[in-house]
Length: 487
Image (cartoon, rainbow, N blue to C red; front, side, top):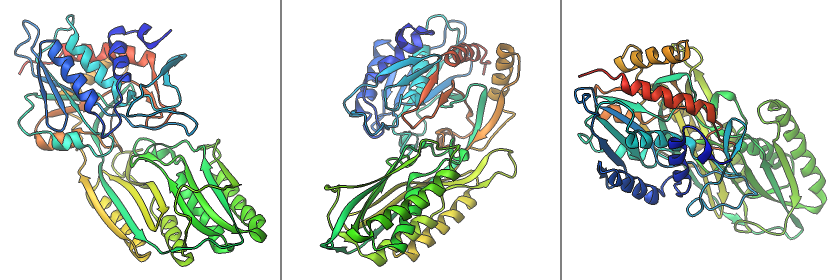
């Protein structure tokens, strides 16, 4: 059985088509062209913005012309993450899927159900001939995952809709009505390289097997960040032995909790045993702390004859300063919301770390539903790295989406959910960044909500989509569209 055999077949057919097209963030040219052609082949008004965003308009079914116009919105890019032992080029290779019980998974890579399934549902609405609906606009944006670029570049006045349904949520039964704002932070420093000691052994110290996950929706699970784990171990090694730091690199995406970090050291022959012992002692403590969240985490200590960087090591004082700052960098949940029970208010994800070739780099993504709290933590992070002699730059800041729990579309969605499921859904705000906040700023007064079928472990190779949940969600979306009121 393949996903083409699953119900609803029309939705899975469209999702399968998306899996055939490479679409990592920043490389959406092929999928943008595909969606443009998709709309044109249906004979629908189709617009492609210069940035690659696609807007497709479908007229109302006869008799529904006076209903409010609904925008179905999702993003075309996907997070390109794979296991280290998997050969996959996200710019060239299709995603290979398989079925495991109620779950659709990918073979060692991210699945792209975030937000491929949302886009597939919107495509299916455009194709449908048996849904009674008012005017429909479908908006599919580029580069949501690495900067909400498509939403930021969306032209004001281009959309005609009264209601926006974002199809990028990941838990069936939850209607999202608000989200956190964000801020990208880049740290840069430099150092002078030193020649390799004559009597040294080159050692690879790798940290692998961490669960990782989405830096917004999974941050409250308190999973270990591989970059922070590496910093803890390196701090002990560099301050207690004669080991020299050659280079380090961990994390690949700003909005994914780092799953792996690879470091390289020069160690004298006589202190090799001590370095191994100190590293293992500290890692064992960390392993015990995260036994439930990251049971498969491991540290691999082994001599190596090859380096992924310049053979010069970091001058010792600089190396310790960098590691101290990395150790002190805020990471994880900073504060929970005082007004919304269970909601993370402010957090930071130390997403990427690189020390190599005379340069030190850290990239983080900070989130908060309170702008002043976000900036306060940003200033704290800046102070930490400036004490280590680094430059810190803020960019890509955006505010959150303010909840409106009594809005017309939310009340309609609650009513239809209750009719279908026999119980009320959860109505909540989330700690991830959704495009609704940015789009709402360009189109004030637009009624908005976000919904989707159940996904698990997005932004990691463990990403999976529930088959039964999609079936129910598709039925639910149809009922909502058919019940949209008149203007």
